[in-house]
Image (cartoon, rainbow, N blue to C red; front, side, top):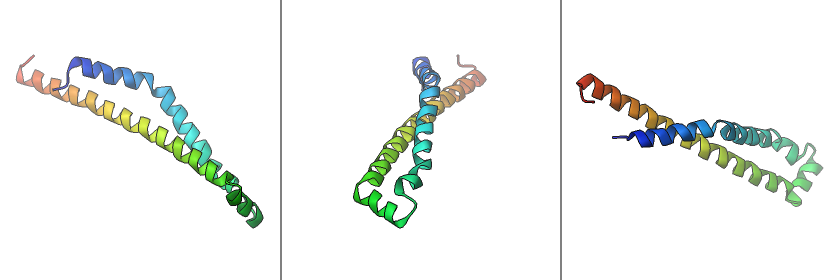
Length: 99
């Protein structure tokens, strides 16, 4: 069974991570949108981007931003499931007359 305290922790986490999750998603999407620019448009620019490591640095930043976003998104999904399980357990208990 999921305790009321655990439910409260889940709700608190969800309430406190709305903006950080949105910020992490925005960071990831911004870096993803700039991926082609970081690579360069012409063959010479692409060659230089690969040679000087700037494209690899951009991809590493993109990967890190994606990881942070997905980590928070997945944790939020887990916490949402905890709240839903708590609700279901309590509904079943009410229906069975066990309060």
